[in-house]
Length: 615
Image 1 (tube, rainbow, N blue to C red):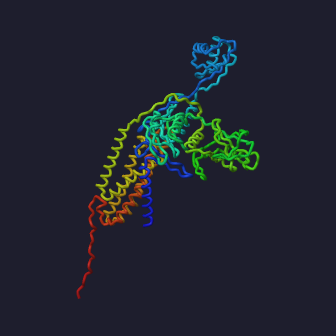
Image 2 (spheres, one colour):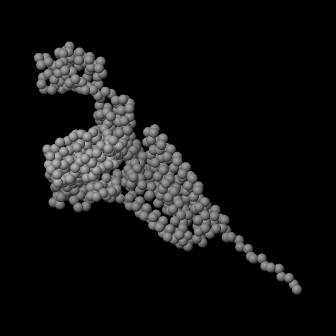
Image 3 (cartoon, one colour):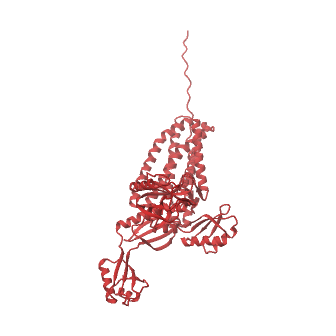
């Protein structure tokens, strides 16, 4: 029993230490080879991730990019001009952009989608105003169907969630528009490391001179710095910043990381990732490159029919051998068969004059051309090539999300203020602390020493639960906070059940140690059944929320579920160990310290004497 108590106490203290450290550190960066990397650096209190209603974010409106592109060629002797074509289109009631192909007779007309009837009307208008077109070729993108828009909705939700922007608001607006609201998606974070001879003291002034707003430069040790700014840096601006730092401060070493959540999310939302695997025949022997083995041109690529449509999963991870970042991929049954046949056929022996590799293309751009190191039969492989964490993560998201069913155009972008605002958030937190303090005062005043145990257990519960919210991470919105506050009440309720049982056993005359053991055993069924019932309710709420798009329901149910699980842990293990520790410290004889009722000592009768008979 003593060994079990020591083990549980050690475990409880370790969990508490991890939770306190996680909440105390403003940033957490943990990279263990073979495990997903943990990077947490949120601006919310205790580093918690706040939702759109608590910290604001970005509001994006996308529209399905539909329309018709007409390639029109007139006879060379015609007097066709951009102006004449524009007038003819106005007469036909068709608003389109006209571009000259610079040969005097060919033009490109881009406008709204034209059905066959309207397209014929436009052709007749051009014929009457100018001449009969020699060629009249159209490329149409028809309006999206409901099924396509639902597919767009699903893919965008998956992309922004995979990128780490949890709890986004993604919804349809009309027949061809998508609204995306991303919490906390403003500003940029730059991580940069310079060579030893860099003039780092001038780093802040150089960045501020770029015109960025609210610049903060933080040293991370050595020549590594973390720069935060409220300005969102686009792709071109990132490269311009790096060039400026190279020129003004010193040599920038890899990795140079810029995280602009809103800009990165915009790129991913509209990106179309077309993945293709080709079989490459090398003309000469394989060569050793910086990150991989490959072959120099000339070479011949041939298609084997393996594309991103055959991919079922892609995720960033670490190579278990080298620890370098890589993208793990998995094919479906069809893709696994094709990939297995290709890797089995490719000759990877470098002592031959001709060898083959696998060329991987993304949107017709070569990503990497690795050598098949083995015959891969199960459809699982890994793409390596000197990726940093962000590159591997972004590539995995693009590959896994697939391409959008219809192209999208960003037509509106603006910032969204938080519903509560910073001042209201601080007031809400103060109200929560006051409420928690009143609860602690009540349980201590009524249950005395047992109330102190409940107070300590409740503080332990809050620390562990908030640490879980931070490490997962769980984005906190108002419904999330509501679920968390309700779970605090359940945690107190479990302790009260235990203490009432202990009080009853003490009243019956048991010793404190015996009353604790019996009280816990009798309170546990009620605690278990009540919490399991609540967990079932949470599962039902999550099930309905996922199918009805109820983000508010999901947030409430998720934090309530986490809180209930942690409250069971604290009530059954933490409170029990603390009570046993107090009893072991010599308070076992002071039973009045553990109950508000006055304990009467047990009446002790005298043994009756035997009757003495006279002689």
